Amino acid sequence: MTTTTPAATTELETVAELAAQLRVDSIRSSTSAGSGHPTSSMSAADLMAVLVARHLRYDWDDPSSPANDHLIFSKGHASPLLYSVFRAVGVVSEEELLTGYRRFAQRLEGHPTPVLPWVDVATGSLGQGLPDGVGVALAGKYLDRRPYRVWVLCGDSELSEGSMWEALDKASYYQLANLVALVDVNRLGQRGETEFGWNLDAYARRAESFGARVIAIDGHDLTAIDNALTTAAEDTGDRPTVILAKTIKGRGFSEIEDRNGWHGKPLPEDLADRAIAGLGGVRDLVLRGPRPDPESATTTAEPVTGDGARPHYGVGEKVATRKAYGDALVALGARDPRVVALDGEVNNSTYAGEFAHAYPERYFEMFIAEQQLIAAATGLNVRGYRAFASTFAAFLTRAYDFIRMGSISRVDLRLVGSHAGVEIGADGPSQMGLEDLAMLRAVHGSTVLYPSDATSAVALVDAMATTAGISYLRTTRGAYPVLYPDGETFPVGGAKVLRDGDDVTLAGAGVTVHECLRAADLLAQQGIRARVIDCYSIKPIDTATLTAAVTATGGRIVVAEDHHPEGGLGSAIADALVAAGQAPLSLTRLAVTGMPGSGTSAELLAWAGIDADHIAEAARDLLG
Image 1 (cartoon, rainbow, N blue to C red):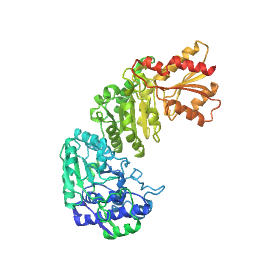
Image 2 (spheres, rainbow, N blue to C red):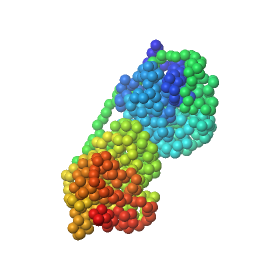
Image 3 (cartoon, rainbow, N blue to C red):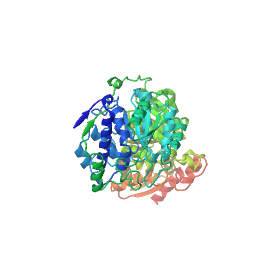
Image 4 (tube, helix red, strand yellow):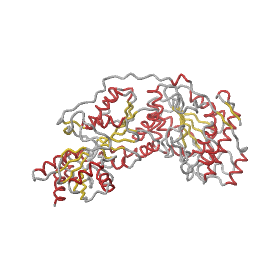
């Protein structure tokens, strides 16, 4: 076994041997598994060999060190290459590489996930690693204030994703010279040639137009790679670097080099044997590059300003929950210096602008780039920051894949969607989030919250700060009366009984809680006693409170929600009651079933059939 250590002493001849080992191990692991992407790994092997041996400043024995550089495989399908790197630095054994890759209940999954401590974020959905890297780089430059670099291996196919250009745009805007994108331009995608093939000039023009410094090289010339990485690591002060590396898919084995039809296919054993022999056979290099400067791991605590006291509102005072979110975030930021906020150029509507004013150094504007908004929050969470990301609820739909991947990345994201439902009024359906509750409920391990007043909104913002996974707060545009006094508690997974009654249960969330209360008043005039439930926690739902209420009201329940009927509050309640074996059960669900238009809030709530009059009518129907 050969061992070499620091970068400065690792000669390029040894790096060439490392590159060959990475190719061989990429073939061996994928052939053993019977699946994988060896050719996509072989094209980038030279890039990774030079980076890992001579430029990546990383303590492999302490992957959580704040001084470490970050390596993100945006082209996550090249996982054989990444895992071969892990073997080459001595953190993954040969046995694990050959018997654990793509196997059930093993950690070397088909695409990288943070189940491995050396992986920051899950990748494999193309177009996400570079945007996530922007978030990590933002943390490095503006919050950690440490000299670590963020190296992102990208594929040429994913440069067709708009999110990649959102990333470069924001990296340039924030002058992230600590971010380096290494683009493996191997010409061939899954079904054939990519949009620009080997036209590096076309890629260069685009990258430069987004403000990046571009270096074009032969991706198999070790000296050229080394020089490019050295240049990229120089502090340019204000620009990210894009290294465009012209490579050959399947490099190292002439029988498959630059040949279409080999994407995502392991080499059969006989072909693998010939390829390995042609590459010089199996090697057992264990080679680590430079370690980070220990002094760069020193942490300086941020000063905490303000008293951090929760905002207070009087019962009956009209306050929009979106305003309460802004107030609560400012107070939370005073108590916790690791709280940061991001927004999609609507912070005067979401009220994230209050945080931006109070803590401008901890606020990041992503403009109208919702995918980058979620990705930046993801990257910031990698560095331990509690990121709150806000925009209109409707616009989170275009970033859904990033939210989904955030769950796979096991990050804690705190998302806030304002201007939800028909309640927003005259803006019309393009602005009405009517799918958001279903969308977020479907995310693995998510928490979905929908406060009805300012007091509960403040409490739930605080709860989100310590909630693991993806949490979502839906806020309301209009100002509604405060229902709860100071000091009321709102545990995640709870619900509140606002009225007692034994004839029928009325359940709502957010704006429909107020309509349920009005409906209860209308019913009371006819001697009908309605129980009103505020389901502020939609996931997890408070099954115990709901079953107790429905049992007390003879199985009768009306659910009203400002959301499409699919996947929202009604679905959550029905799922919970059915799973609990609730019987008898007579459930009426009121939701937005048509295509709304413009109007006042009152007009649209009535049109949708979710206002007090319709809720009361539905309750009377249940009672016969």
